Amino acid sequence: MPKIKVGDANIHYHVHGDGEPLMLITGFSGDLYNWKKAIPLLDDHYMVITFDNRGSGHTEAPDAPFTMAQMADDAAGLLDALNIDQVHVLGWSMGGNIAQELTFRHPGKVATLILMSTYIREPDRARFAIDAMIHSVREGASMDTFQTMMQAWCSTESFFRGKVSVCELGEGCDINVLNGFSRQKKALDAFDSRDRLQLISVPVLVVHGEEDIMVPLPYGERLAAGIPNSEFEVIEGAGHFLPPAGYVPLVLDFLAKHPLKEMVGQESAAGIGERN
Image (cartoon, rainbow, N blue to C red; front, side):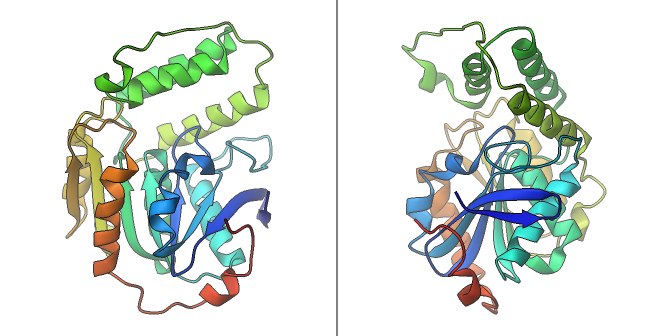
């Protein structure tokens, strides 16, 4: 379980494959294992870097509030620790917020930007729904119930066809896990890039699911419209959770058009951390 000290956090991360570096940033309550189906489709072409955001997974961070800017600085610090000067960045959902913030705060590190299922400002309905999910666990629901509710918002109607819903009372929920999610949620609530999108000058691909109810399609359209010269792709029949078979070909085509001009630091990074 490789970790690197970055500021006040110990970041849990993995590195897969070789080639130009591609950092994947996951969303709210997720961890690096969210990418397990995508990595085999990417690591033949790129050196894929995944990690747990503070508040999730095995990353260790102080028991205190944090911000989206802080999570972006975590990502930048991880790149520094891996001796990577510039990287392709892909962020999904809240990870797209972090990716935008990384571009604003550390523009020299980001060569290209891919934003999936994300937005300029969090939808109010999603904000209320996630708050209710967190509150339900504090009142006694299980973390499995939390994940079931999240799945209901993030997957499509066809995913649930024929399935039976089971909700349970919680048994010994790890309060540190729930507090981590709560801190992520507050950082997510505060994010707003409306007045900064025009600052993004790198090549950008925005990808959105046609049937996303957590972050409806118009949010993706507005995000793409606000970024100069961005590309926009819609995956038909997809919800908030995008299938790797749907988005990976789009990502590979986009990155092939925008290779890194320099590969500074890649050889140094290749010897660091866990490679699968």
